[in-house]
Length: 221
Image (cartoon, rainbow, N blue to C red):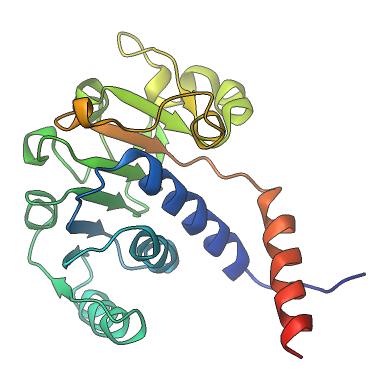
């Protein structure tokens, strides 16, 4: 045995890391403003990964829990050395965002398509089913590309998954095909396009991530 991992943190880290890969390949290279809705575990790791792949000059954060929002913005500004600004509404977090992270547990949409800036890339981390979804069909309909990390899981969910609902049903691209070069990354011709990453979770990556962490630890010690 190489090591033992306890607790939920690794799951949040690998979900955040995969979200960062999606941002790297699907967002505009000149993205400077990040919008974030949510202030929980997933929000922390998604933000950290986003900052690792893009140089954001501004981070606007909204959470319905005012106390959590204030603590989150202060903590992230200090830990991640970013300018995390708490804002008073989800709309304020969305309107100027080049990249938008939705990391809530909301069963109802927290974002409206009308708030989105042309060319924005959005990571949907929270609920994404017909009866429980943090983004609505209006956003899915505006997106020109839908990408997921777990196509087999998406197929298993079938029409429970919001992006599979008629009349929106279409092909979900796989993130791995974009990373491997089998499918195109975002191009300059797509500068005004809205792209959507549907994070479904790829549990096997926890093993890969844990192995890398253990190897780094053993190297350092």
